[in-house]
Length: 128
Image (tube, rainbow, N blue to C red):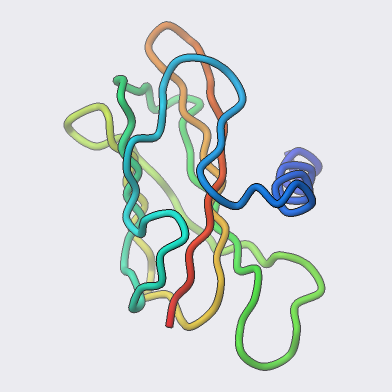
C-alpha cells in the first residue's frame, strides 16, 4: 500500500496534475471542500462529493502536506485522516483532529461505487 501511495503522489506531482483528476470511468468528483486549487483558512474537515453513490469499502481519502513554512520537506508528509461515506451516500467526509496549519496539501481519493467500479484522483489546496 505504501508503494502505491508513493507512486500516486510521484505521478501526480511529476505530471503536474494537482487539479482534480481521474483514471477510470464512473463516479466523478463534482465538488470538494476545500475546493481544488483554493487557498483557505485552516479547515477542520475534508468533504468530497461525487455524482454517484459510493460504498465505504474501497472509498478513502489520503492527505499529504507538500510544502510548509520553515524547513523544506524532502517528501510529501502524510496527515492521518479517516474518511467515511456520508448519509447521502455521495459524499466522503474526513474530520481532522485539528485545523490544518499554513502550507500546501495534496488530497488523494479513491471512490468505489455500488457496481464495484473504482476511480482515483488527486487535487491540491493551500492553507494560509
